Length: 218
Image (cartoon, rainbow, N blue to C red; front, side):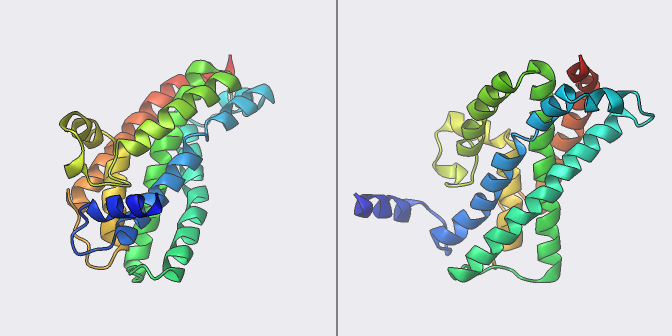
């Protein structure tokens, strides 16, 4: 059974790089996704404790409140990046350890976490209960992960799944991380496009969440 799995892994086209090098940025992106997508449950807790109502009567704008929560999720996700880096170094992955590359990886992680944390916040504002939120969060997490390039290239996906993957922000996050983390890797979409797409997703979701955020207080 293990031999069959190993042969299937070898069949995945990763160019001149090992599958382990291909997979490492995907593991980091997965960690960020799984942490951030459930960040919205804190909003439900804050509502139950009466904290949200205090935020809503403060002079802070709704956009500032949502952006602050999104950045908070991003900063928390940096610990996952540190763990992945340490494990990758331990198993011999060829990581780009230049300070600028590491800094850009941190920026990518923060933006990616902000995207999924804000999506989580939107869900929390709509469903308002912990039980519904957890159910929806679990329902969308795996499709987001598997409909991306985190564990296999887009080129080997069915045509319909490629279309979905190209509309998935996780795809662009993984693409940017591979270019920044792995020595010699060349980004598939271009680093500039990756960041444009991620920032656009983050801004749109923050605007939507800022409109919905008052609803969670009622």
